[in-house]
Image (cartoon, rainbow over all chains, first blue to last red; front, side):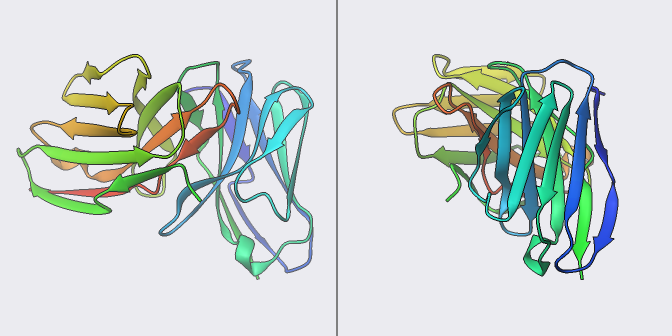
Length: 111
Length: 111
């Protein structure tokens, strides 16, 4: 398996609390992505990074922020979690014009 | 809205038959990729086809790309029970450096 890990794998949190998900890679890939997966919507891009400290918004970025201070780590923060952010979150990594490798996902429940 | 849309949303066939899934996208691309997702797991890359290619093969998989129609198809020949999964197309564009997924096709192989 490609060297990509997500943590935590499962999390239950309360509405209004901040939550940070971590994606760690050992492949030195340039691109890192955060997606959410919900029934009927496939994978929707939240934020992505094309280098250290270089990030941009995806199609569903409201309520989320990201940071990438090192090549290997890409953090996704829910600033104030809401029930609509209950989802499965996937991190992916890729090189330029190459396939992506996915983490195993984080199942987040906001109660 | 999402870049790609797969058709059909769900497909059930008998083992041994061929399965065809289609993907349409909206904007120009540099490559198109197909992924498989088994229930509850991360996505696994199947095949990547670049915008200057028309057809690509990998084992029992055949992918075509028609950039004039902004569409691609994935053919799985001689299907097996293990092919039961969700299949997603994803498009990559050098300009915005995004990797954007469609909504997926749920394939069920009936033994």
